[in-house]
Amino acid sequence: LLPLLGCRMLRLTMQFGFCDDSIVGLATVGYSCFTFKENVQLGSHIAKVCEALIKDSPNEHLLRSRLVATLGIFHIFTQPAAAVVAQLPTMYESAKLAGDMESATMTRWNCCSVIFYSGAENLQNLSKHFAMCIKEASKYKQTNWLYMSMAYFNTCLYLSGEIGSDSDTKSFDELIVIGKSTKSNLLLWQCHICKLVQCFLMRDYLAVMSLCEANPCPQPKRILHAVRSLYEGVACLSLARDTKRKDLRNTGEKAVSDMSKWARMSPWNFESKYKLLQAGLHYLDGDIELAEGAYKESIISAQKHKLLNDEAIAFELYGIYLVEREMITKGVTQLSMAVRKYKEWGAIKKVEELQLFVETVKQNI
Image (cartoon, rainbow, N blue to C red):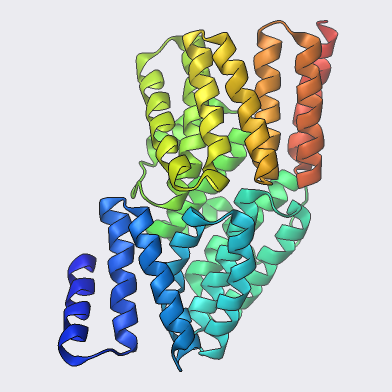
């Protein structure tokens, strides 16, 4: 329906003349090019035209608030995460000036979630930002963003090893009940991703698989599909080495294939993840030289693009790979680097888990 509506609005523009809704129609066409044809390049070019037209419109703030979700999807595919975060406050102010508190709350939440997945800020500070999201969403009765903020707030607290003091914040179990009772697939999907993050970082790969099997991906072209592909792919490839199960290998290979598309669209945000999955597949195939090269490339890419959490994960998995290859001293060095990066990110619970693992490895030297 979206492509038809967008084309219809453009035809009406050609017939009756240009207006603000013409920009909405053009943005809808651009979004459809990406969603249905996977043509992110054409879609992003159309988005840039829309943004130029919005700047020249007397209703700039209103249009920005109306199109914040539609145009925002292209930023993450065509720009580094840091650049996306830098633009979101402007969109937030536009939405507030237009009196659109739903878009304003959504923009604040989007900003926090991009920071979370890029590791751009310490988790302790980020938990405070999500607390502000909760406060604002509660004030303006934006229940979707209220509950999704709670999901990420809980995840930040869990990873940072902090204990929540706000009795009004719902637990994951309560949020899932709310999601099911209100039929909010978006809330359920966000809860699934947050739980996936926790299980993956604690290296509970069986739990990762159980979560993915219980929650099929609803829309493969959503940005969070790339996040899930990383966690599910790494887990499957690791388990496939131990079990030799063909289905796990197939899932891992699909994750590599999917991530290669995302990496071509946005090397800033997805190249390091692709290299990490590639390393896991090479390791499974016994291509030791290629695996080691891909692990190193993943670390370099994460450092280059300033993705702190991706860098920590890459150091950790490379270190485990080296330990399993009986290069203990070299492996411990990489694992110690992972501990440093996780500590910098503020993931204290993960730091404690990994330090115990390192100590166990050292005892076997």
